[in-house]
Length: 169
Image (cartoon, rainbow, N blue to C red):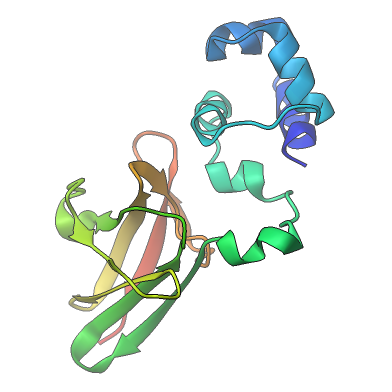
């Protein structure tokens, strides 16, 4: 439950509900409702919370159990190496309107590489990459996402996380 995780991080950092509410621009009651599970958090608020505690959004969501009724809406991603170092990126996000892949191989441009959506709601693209280590993220409907299927991450200069892929020779 996200609320329990929020409370854990708040208490671990010795922050009161009032202080957190001021930092997030919400009421103390909102914090209380989130922590008790009586209200759900928006992704934009979760992103702010992750920044306050200097953790990734994935770390906050890691304790959440997916709703089996909505599992088809959960993001899933796979990468396959194809011939000549073409890396296949795919992300299951049926409800998304746009998905862009960006990273150090695209100078972190928000225009990045647009993925194409299949009838099944899986977004795909293939990227030619030379051997080496690359950091990347998805931009899903203007929200920056880590690769949910890739546990390899690295802390960036903003204090958040990037997904990491190592391309072999």
